[in-house]
Image (cartoon, rainbow, N blue to C red; front, side):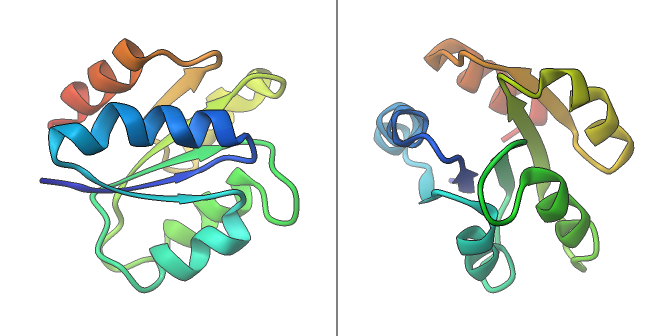
Length: 117
């Protein structure tokens, strides 16, 4: 199964991903911001990264720019609630899919299916 990193400053979002995907066999890494997430995406093979757009310390755009430089760039999904007007810009920077919050279990599963993961 796929390795997935989720970076979001809301613990309920991280828990939604874990409870939705771990029982299906996915390996889920969760971090509260992209600064902490960088330790994972720079050192771990990942198939997909879900990142919130607006987070403290290092935000989703900074992470997206850094991830785009990786030799084996994973598929990136950018999520946002308050900053959703910036989601279109993230596609130009390499995001495969953008999602507007609030997220649901079905949205997460449909996103992974559309990515072929």
